[in-house]
Length: 321
Ligand code: PBG
Ligand code: ZN
Image 1 (cartoon, rainbow, N blue to C red):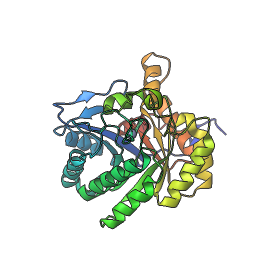
Image 2 (cartoon, rainbow, N blue to C red):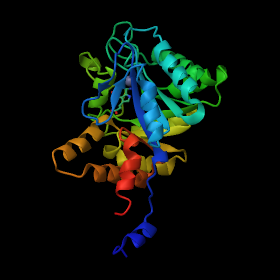
Image 3 (cartoon, rainbow, N blue to C red):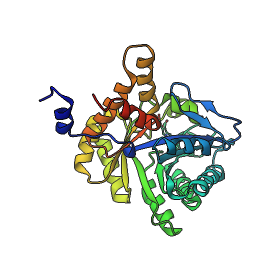
Image 4 (cartoon, rainbow, N blue to C red):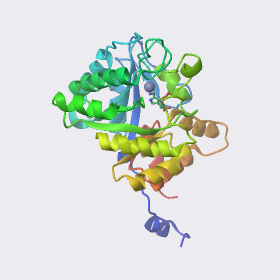
């Protein structure tokens, strides 16, 4: 049954296609030119001047779905200004119209002086859930107003999906979707991203890392609780992150909750594949396609991948395998 490519193709249960992929984009305020992101081939910190050309290039390569991360040049404790990212959304919308599907990450870690995903309590001992949720809802409304198709909260505060839904509906943006980082684990696979977004947590004690708000990888039932909560609060698309270390969680959750599921192949995961290939220890294209297949096999309908923009050439290259 596996002797020839025809039978293998007919028997295959999973077909990869560029239209299942979402490409992350970084846009950095005050940057001149653009800078490569360490560890991720073909991924850049774009400036306002280079972002549109990148998107144009991606559209030509068959990628039309994006997840935008805006990195402002001013960091604060609270009272954030979402104008920079909103301006970038508006510019992309004006230039590309409905030719792009644009999701925008909603979080505060690129905005805060300390790099945490929320505002701190008055004694600066921990993240203040309620105050953070109010800021996130304001950000989501600003991004929707600027033309985002989807907002994607990655902070992991309790109740943020309900607050964002209410803010969107209350401002005439009922049709803007919420893609919730529902099962986002406290992971070591976020390294290149944090450098790219200037979003590494800086602090001591409870503020040394994100363990107080991201899910403990040894507590998968918290992922279920978080996903059930986000679904009940109105999330349209749910996400598991990181990908490969959490295939079991993706499989369980996708079977339990009949919503579209996305998986985030994170920066550290991607960099690991590329390191193997660079060391001559693996065929990078094969690793990419094998991991994407595993995500679909586990139950993902959508895949966020730094290599999305290479999908068409990767798929073309191995069509005869
Ligand atoms: C921050 C955020 C992170 C990612 C997306 N949004 C990192 C983190 O939680 O520290 C990870 C993306 C990646 O590693 O590719 N809210
Ligand atoms: Zn964050």
